[in-house]
Image 1 (cartoon, rainbow, N blue to C red):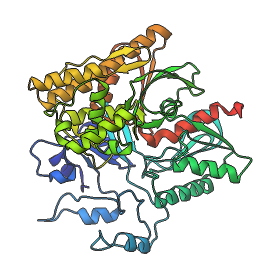
Image 2 (image 1 turned 135 degrees about the vertical axis):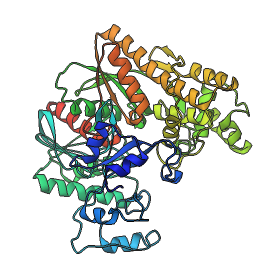
Image 3 (image 1 turned 180 degrees about the horizontal axis):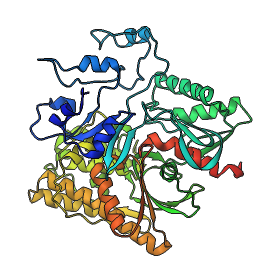
Image 4 (image 1 turned 45 degrees about the horizontal axis):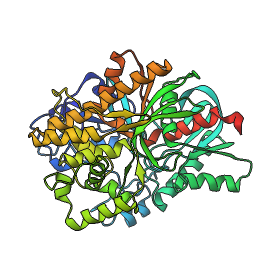
Length: 509
C-alpha cells in the first residue's frame, strides 16, 4: 500500500489504464509489473515479476502512510485471518483467532458490519480485468440482458461467491473464499441472509454445482429440503464458466458459441474431473466437442499439491520413461516413485482429469520450476514469470476424434531440454503452444459449424500472457472474442453463470 502514485512509480511500471484503476472510486489492488532492480524484498511475491499494489483508501491509511523522514513509503498489508479462514472482523474474535499472529491491535468504536476482502484487478489489452471482486465492487449489481426470476446461485467450492437475481439485476457477493471449513461456510450463510434482506429477494430457484460434495451444493440441497416450494438445478461447472462470460458481455443471442473453458477442477457429466474443455453452447445447454486427453491424478488431491506426481503421470500417459535426469523424477525418492507407479498401474486413488490447470502444473515440474506448491496456481504463476517474450516457436499437439493428445508436447519439451534450451524459452514455447492450439481448434470448429464467437473463461485465463496472446491470435483470424470484464474468470464468476443458466431453463421446472 502506498500513499500516492509517485511512490508506486518508484517500484512499478504504470500505464494510463493502470493509473485509472488505482485512482478509481473502487481503489482495488492492481497487479503491476515490477521495475528491474527494485529493492522490494523477494518474500513479498516469491518467483513473480508482478506485485499487487493499492493506494491508501481510508483516512486511517492516509495517516499511517503520510510521508515522514526515515519512515517506509510502502506497507505490506494482509487480511486479518489464518490461512483458509475468513477475515476476523469482530474485536473479540480477532483477539482470539489472531493471538498467535498479531503483536498489537488497532481498534475503533464503530463495529464492522460485514467482512469484505480487497478487490484485485489487472489491465488486459487496455481494459480492466477483475481477479477478485469484493470491496468497492460488491454489492453493486450487474445489469443483465434478460429479466430474471428470483434465483439464488450458490457458486463453486474455491473462490466462492454466491449470486442473487432480481428483475434484470444480478447481485454477486463479495469474495467468500474456499468453502472448505466451518468458519468459511458460516460466512457464506451469513452473507446470503444479509443479501436476501438487503435486496428484498426471496428465491424461487436455487442453482448449484454438479459436485455433490461441495459445501455450497450441500447448502443448496438442504435449503430445498427445508423449503419444498423451492426448485433446484445442478449446473455443470464449465457450462457455468461459459455462461458467466456470456452474461458478463450482455450476450443475448440464442446462437451457440465456442467456449474455451480452461481451469483446474470441475466435475464433468461423465464423473471425471474436467478442466481443458472446448464446448459448443449457450445459456440453455452445451456439447463437449474436445478435451485434453485424460490423465490420472496419483494420490488424488496430493497430486494437485505435488506437481512432480502429475509430471510422472503425464510422462507415463505419453509413454515416456521416467529418466532420472528429468527434474520431477530426480525430485521424488525411489519409494514415492514406486508408490506412484503402483497407483497408476492399478488405478488406485487415481481419478482421471482433463484439466488444463494440471497440465500447466506438470510442465512447470518438468521444467524444474516447481515440484511442490503452497498455494493454488503457484506452479503456473512462476512459470509465466519466466517467459521469454521474444520467443515465438511452439509445440504441436495431436487432435484425434474429441481428444487433444499432449504426448508430442512432452516429447518436444524433453528434446529441447536435452539441447540445453533455457527455462525462459521452454516456458514461452509451452504457452505459445496453448495459444496455437486454441486458434487451431477454433478454426476447425468454425469450418464445421460456421460459428465465429469464442468465449474465454476459467481460472487458467488469469494468465496474462496466455489470455492476451489468445485474444490477439483469435481476433487476427477474424473471431469475435468474448472475455471477462466485470466478474472474475476464475470460480468467483461461477455463481453468475449458474444463475443465468437456471433462468434460461426456467420453463423446464
